[in-house]
Amino acid sequence: MEAREHTQASLKLLREQLDSGGMRSARRMIHSLHPAEIARLLESVPLGERAVLWEMVGSDDEGDVLVEVSDEVRDGLIKGMKTEQLIAATEGMELDDLADLLIDLPETITQKVLQSLDDQDEERLRQVLAYGEDSAGGLMNVDIVTVRPDVTLEVVCRYLRARGEMPDGTDSIFVVDRDNGYVGTLYLSRLLTNDADTSVAAVMSTDILPIPAHTPSQEVVWEFEHRDLLSAPVVDDNHHVVGRITVDDVVDVIRDEAEHSFMSAAGLDEEDDMFAPVFKSASRRALWLGVNLCTAFLAAAVVDIFQTTVDKIVLLAVLMPVVPSMGGVAGSQSLTIITRAIALGQIDRTNARRILRKELLVGVLNGIGWSIIVAGFTYLWFGQWRIGGVIGAAMIINLIVAAVAGFSIPLALRRMNIDPALAGGVVLTTVTDVIGYMAFLGLGAAFLL
Image (cartoon, rainbow, N blue to C red; front, top):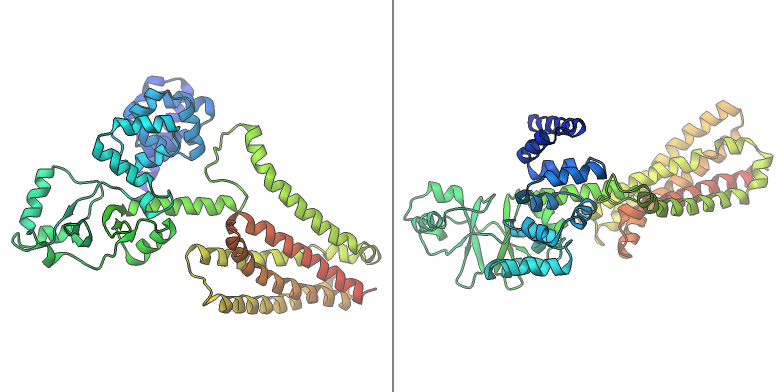
């Protein structure tokens, strides 16, 4: 908490320096910040100030900052950089971070960056780029340390001293055979606490299972969460060790998924620039506003069908929003639970029917319970038990439909390769509004006229 407060204080002071024109002081502060802090600052200032701030960032930090900022902010910064600047910014970067950056660079610059690397780094970088961005291979760092199982710990220590440095975040060394096939993991704690004459095979752990390079990033997160991993080896199709994933890579995936789910619920992209031009932001948001407008007209069309009923019984117009509103909330609860279960891999054909049954029973119980309350309140308010009965029955119907819709919509969208977090809410609102109005006004037309 103290570190976070210190960062916030530093960013506030830097903004004050920029506002007062203290460029020299601001430049010194920029050089003292971590690349992630600089990235956060760049994302939180308007475009004009961002350009000034970017000029103050040292060339040694530019590449690391570009990796940290959102996609849209990165695109804007890259457009203002010359080819020589971009190539210089990539020098000295970790290969996994460089791979993330190259995805957004023009092809001509990517090729020049690859040509600037030595043969070994170029081959390792191409290895990372061969895998999807959202896979274990795309997350991995190819800078790893491997040893053979038949050597002693003394030999390993001499090798590490000769190497001179260890990759950042190293908590273990991977044990491989002569073909670079994964055998086990040697924790540094065991290397330091066992006799020097002990063989690697005697103290290595075989509990850590390697992660195939094509494994989706969501499954990688699951592995780290449920096996309490700090790092894990990544293997190719031939079981050869090609890299490692560390817990900081997994934290980035978790953060990105959380932002994606949160922003998608409003039809937005988590990579959007908060200070993007007004017309650009408006055009992006217009799409989902248009979709919502179409669904609203659909619900209005249902109401129009029962216009005669509403004209004759004005009280229906007063109570009309209650039923679709309750259905929307109940459906959102089911939708959220199922969408989360899909993301965590907790739902499949073997348990889908049980989950549907459970959500259906929840909808029935809530429908009956709240229908009694609403019917009673309506009778006390208007003194007409028939209207209370109509709204109670309509609520039972809509809450049951909402439970089924909240369960089935995410599964149907996933089958169509559509993100449930992005479109689920819009579809659900349409269903609960249409069924809610139709049930309430339909029952009203049948029993009150």
